[in-house]
Image (cartoon, rainbow, N blue to C red):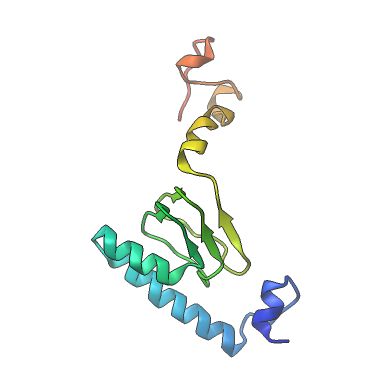
Length: 130
């Protein structure tokens, strides 16, 4: 079994194996090109070459940093904001569309407000940071 096969099956593996070093270098070359691209069409083409799956209307806003890239799966309408650094050793999937996150925004609480909602829907007049 190769070190790559061990890695993706969550077994102990040698991260310094030549086959993995080559894959990391290829991914770094690809994400650097993606990060430097200015046109969205070019970014999308480069992103499609980097990740394992890029569904309709899915996008990562640069800069992106990843170890292997090929294990990242972006479902339809997925959006990941700038500065992302997904752990690229094992399959990673982002399947929730961005509008689903907006619907769930009320689940996130500000630690500055003791866990209470801090938007106008809180009804308690608490002020906090978003």
